[in-house]
Length: 337
Image (cartoon, rainbow, N blue to C red; front, top):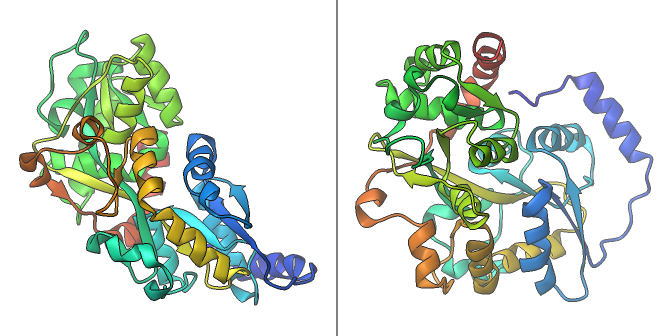
């Protein structure tokens, strides 16, 4: 896998970490998470529900956090309790024996969890779908991924580097492939790149390009589009006719978490209806529990119609994990290079 490290590095990291004395479990929980707005909203909507518990955020992108989990596998106690990851990454760390299989009886709010978000090794926190974004002042509405990932747009097409796996899913669906086979989409992406498609390092950089009119279209999670609309960016969305790939972001408990009792308490708070409702309002993602009383106007903007829901496509996490290293190499050398 992309985050694998060699045995010597893992043992060296473990030895360094082992030099710190293990403290008794206290009222503390350490959350591995992305930084920025996501971390801020965890504090606002979840951490605040835990009274008498110190919540610490260990902020990094997902890949270095997964590598650290692997390095700590040999330790009796790791350095984090809970890790925020995509559903694909949750599957991957479980395959490497890094995730605690959860006892849902310890989390009362789990009774309201949507069954599809209840994994043995983790919990879905929020979800959205990959949609087409476009500026209506610059182009007419595309019908789907094929209309958007098209060389005809030249340098008015924007592609987000950190969304690599999901861009490849979209290109595959646009080119006769599937969530089980990304290969048919590669020629389409190369053609777009040769025509001048711009690559942005982050979601925020892509949003800035939309705001300034540097680009007219691209693909992104509908939830992000809602955030950008709220920020005054001229952008509309289309649920692609080829299918709407789902994105689930959730949490796993590290198998050797030092504070498992408080980790369970934090995960339970994550599923609280108030936390889920406020995340929907603040971030534009759909809740994963059935009792979050999301305002109707918000639900309409962030969700999907009954017809669009029929086009929701779940991802093949096993395929993505198996092919990720090769696809990352292709992306960096053939597409970006």
